[in-house]
Image (tube, rainbow, N blue to C red; front, side):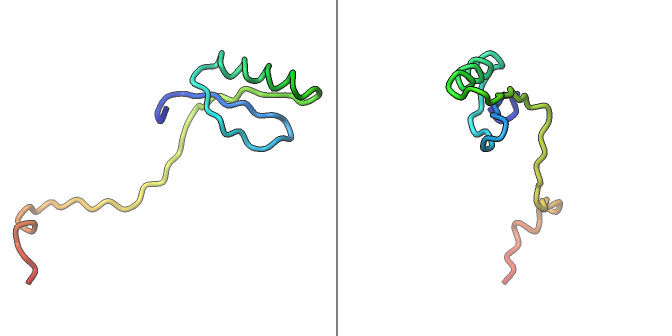
Length: 72
C-alpha cells in the first residue's frame, strides 16, 4: 500500500491510529464496530491525501572512467 490511498480510523481522545485499511468501506465498518464497543467516543475515518518523505544526498557518477581506475 505504499503509493495507494488508504484509510485509518481515529477515536477522539484515543491513541494514534495504526491500522491501514485498503478501502473506505472497510474503514467505515471498523469505525462502526469501534463505536459500538466504545459508547460516547466519536470515531473518524481518515483518508490519505498526500505524503512527504525526506531523501538523503544522492551521488551520481558522470565519468565512467573513474569506476575502472584503482585509487592505489
